[in-house]
Image (cartoon, rainbow, N blue to C red; front, side, top):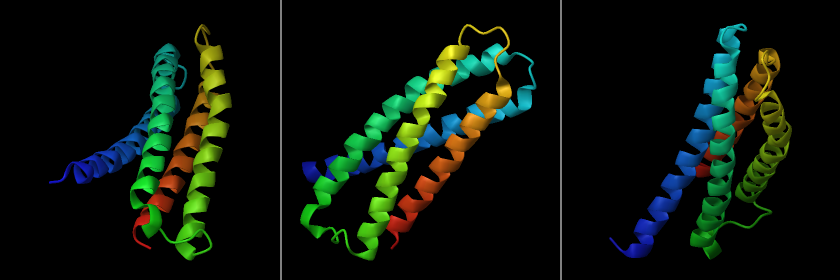
Length: 147
């Protein structure tokens, strides 16, 4: 197997693993927040705090591997005014929106770190929203891959 082919597979694998970490972590924090009902809320905040580190690292991986994927396919990609190009632009805008909308979520988690009674409803809403956006992005990725 040529080295470039192996590198391309690794980049695609890292891209998928990054979105899996983002989605899985958001879903976990959302479920913990919904199911706790105030009991052991500090655990939910601790998990959310860890997730925020993972999230921002994974967003960085998404950007780097996304650029790598675009570079690997280069000239073979359809133009931006094609149906596929439009889907790609929608996905890129959705990822940008996810990153921008995640800043207040991260700030809320940091603010709750020392809180004795964190607002689990707020956390659940923030992570439920993150989960919904990421599911939409994953759907766009599948649509791009098969269309």
